[in-house]
Amino acid sequence: MTPIINIADVPLTPLPATHAVPAHLAERFEVLTGELGGAIGSRKLGYNLTVLKPGKRAFPRHNHWVNEEMFVILEGTGELLLGAEVHPLRAGDVVACLPGGRETAHQIVNTGGVEMRYLAVSTMEFPEVVEYPDSDKFGLRAERPGAENDENRVLRFRGREAQSLNYWDGE
Image (tube, rainbow, N blue to C red; front, top):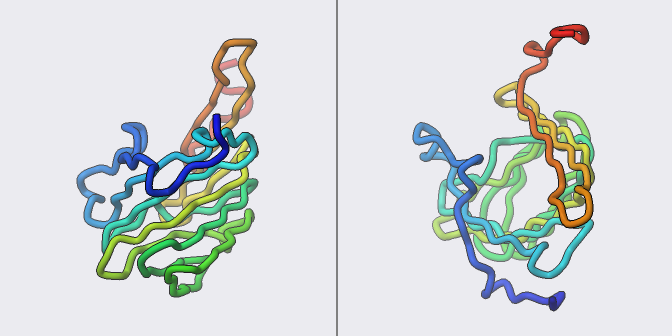
């Protein structure tokens, strides 16, 4: 495996079915991504190429408790929503989104008239908690390495704090 890939050679795909955008949100959300990390043998960083059409965003506004993200704007213009602030984006900009509370919630929006392309890089530390302040939900993801020749065990959960079960529920 070579540790090099040219961005022009990265195949772009819609999100997997587990993250498919519901019809009622398609006006705001649409994304193509190209996975780079696995293709170049990355182990501790996640890499992908993200492509947004004009007026679209890739994901709901969110913040990470554990992982840090970096975005490098390759083409197009847009805005970074970061906490309560809005920052303009253009080709050549490099963005750091640090882990933290809702004040670090972020989202990139293509506000230009052409496709926006950016490289997304993140640490890959688990377990991870992701908050979605606009819908008041959270997501948990934990990974445990599998035994030799087995896949990693991945546990995912999304919910709201008010829906949490009692510690003794079902015992």
